[in-house]
Image 1: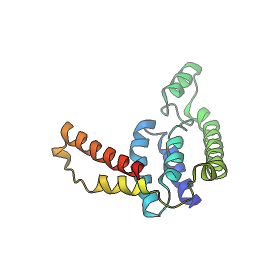
Image 2 (image 1 turned 90 degrees about the vertical axis):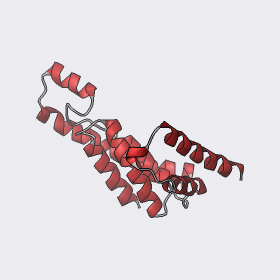
Image 3 (image 1 turned 30 degrees about the vertical axis):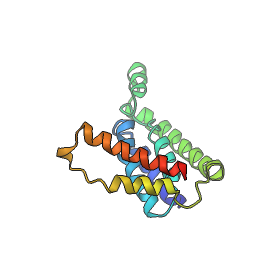
Length: 157
């Protein structure tokens, strides 16, 4: 399982160099959640590292506004930022994954089976078909209410 989590985290981290961090997180988090559930793993084991990996945009000026400001102010070329950014990115990913497995798994029980709340929320979300053209604020509120009701029922039991 560590290879799958590492691969998704590395992919998300390198993709975030080409688009905004929030856009990549919006794309990768639902995919990671589905992969975790299909493999019978705790979803947070996949979601936490992918979320953090989306913040590791160090290689290119387009990665973050701060990168663009520093690059333009210092007159740096892309090649000047690529190698130090790559080293920083790989170091951050390795430290994050090591901490996830050394501290996160035992501390938060991420190595256990899929929690009941994840199964119920996934069932609630997939049982409500939505056509993109027919989604409106009422549909979204109804979906959120169904998820909240399911979560509340889980907490009561």
